[in-house]
Length: 299
Length: 52
Image (tube, rainbow over all chains, first blue to last red; front, side, top):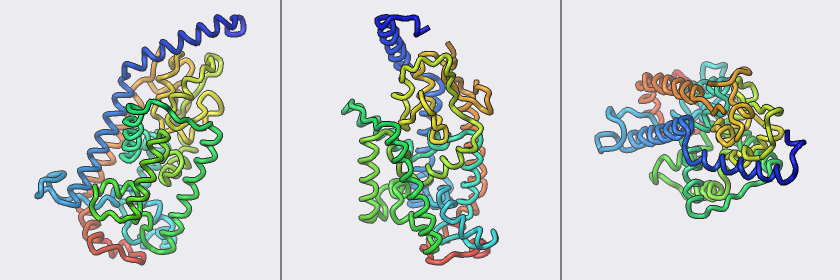
């Protein structure tokens, strides 16, 4: 269809598409509301667990019952760090100091979720991802300018997180305790100022700067758990599928993607956090971009 | 023009809530982990038997 149009007609159609998308984007869809609510609920849940563990319900904090474990019990990355030691111990002993057997169970649950739902953990459940989302959105309210790296640069930068992953697992295995817990920004933030060390504060400031500059910058380039999710997502059943025959290559999906992926080109599905912003932004609806499970569109 | 459905978020939330419920169910285990943590980080691997 585009081939038979004049330049003027193409420009007009493009402008119309942008207008339609902008009008649509003013109204949140049910799927977007579901995502924002889930993110908020999990953020509050983890905050409550941490407060219950640190101060106890008797002091007026957190959940009733005063029985929450430490935050390390709720982080699948503890499972990643202790996995080599656990395997070396024959699966019967060898949990590195600071980790918990629960971490291994959570890692298993995370991998299961990843195989079924791809990067849904990062997009819906991770409280630290939610925090970076909020930081970026607040920044955009004040300074509207968006900084987007070229997808190719973003692709190369995303390899940093694999180096971080290997370094942290190696260190945890060598030293026999959760080395990352000394400066883990997720753990530091959810301790809300308690037991903060200068190193934790510097790392958190670094994360804050990255999150202010780039949407999901920490998740995309640094997060070692993001690296694990990316590796797991290579075997996922859920993917964003682009129908090339109905795609007009308007690039609105690329602009909408918080992970800076080349959605309209070689879509690297394993880095997708399944936020669905590209699908919402697509003027063609699910004729062109859709979330699929084993080839079938999620209804 | 169809837009994204909500089957994906609903199923994801369902699975996540079940997993969290399972973890809350293991509250006793978490409390034991809590006591381990309160003893401080030990610079050597420990066995599951020690955890228990």
